[in-house]
Image (tube, rainbow, N blue to C red; front, side, top):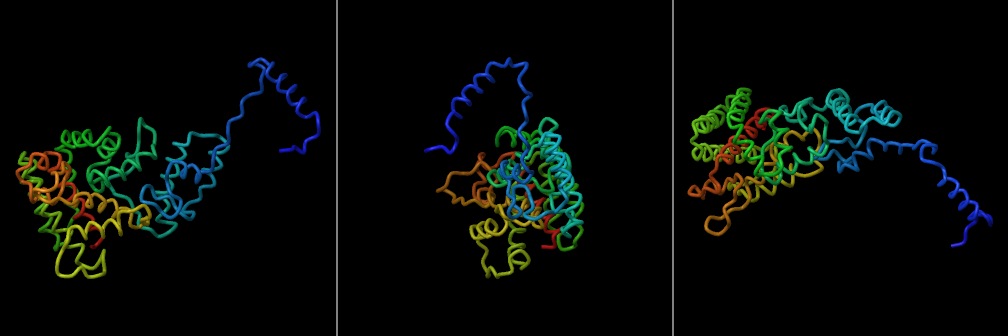
Length: 330
């Protein structure tokens, strides 16, 4: 391609480059830092959605708070992005109810300010980890357990490490579930509350099999309740209840990346319900090693399905779901 530059520019450029290369490093001009990207671009680069409020971390599609000061500080002082993100999150948590009328309990109450930290630094990648853990491993993270344990689960190396962590904190999880159930006061839910307490009592005594079976039955009954009462799904499901259709409806309506922030907490509760409903046919399918409603009912002989970790997870799932039913009026 021909250049519009006058002849001789090339030689002058080469000469200039030679002169610059001859300047000793200590005499060279100070290095200029690359200007920080706008906060929105940084979020997108980290894999988070600006449009619309995504499941991963609810980043707004429209301004929720005045971030001009944060952006200006970030661009002028080049403060570490992790600290800016932490400030943005705190501002987001404090002011979103005031700006949009969205309930101040839009996120699971057990997350608080002690989640999503690694080595004392706020880490956005742990939001992705939370989504993956709930979706793929069926591990409940909403309402229970307490925030420090949630954070430890997010930082754990893999599924086995997370399950081992739950087992080692068995007493803490039982206490977290017990405290969470105390908030359930609606008279129509007291029978379910008592049933979960029975499962927790069995778990506390080391009777894991009955604890898992009882928790799975409560979980199943709660699913039937929310699928038929016309609140989450106004359309009629008919006389019969099908687990595979329930899983598909939950996934289509509640477990996706475009869930609205007002429904974010409920989405976190319902997400681990989907892997708990993965298809299992006795005698034909491999027995799953994660908590599974069908395998709990039809593989009581299996040490693969009936484990201490699955008994704990089953109790957590039933507790989380019942608490959300109570708080959301499902």
